[in-house]
Length: 156
Image 1 (cartoon, helix red, strand yellow):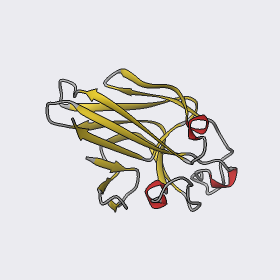
Image 2: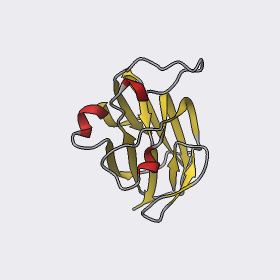
Image 3: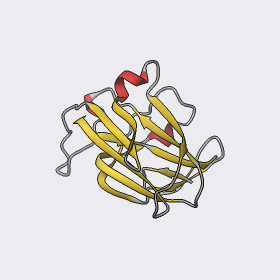
Image 4: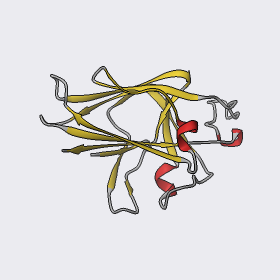
């Protein structure tokens, strides 16, 4: 399963179908016009879910890998717009990510992690669904807000 924080499906340059954003609670969608650097598929990173949010992704019993995709936005002119249409002030992106209550990322700072590129990808293995058959991914802000562009859930 591949979820992309956008309202329409997407066929990526590596020949994978990404479903539109689903199984989430909280947060907001944002879209950007400035392309990111460091990928041959910048359209994959045009949108993000940001704020304090979670995903409850239904899966069959088994063991899974979760791959999280992040896009780093460096300039204040390319921040998500507020509901009034005004640009938001630049904010930090330091946050935690949990899966079924276990920390995957603590004090994750996407800007520091980005280095030479605007794209950060983190993979986690040996994850199992909870008793309800779901992988619960919680994105919890520490400073500013949490963000994610795409989520891949792959059987191991």
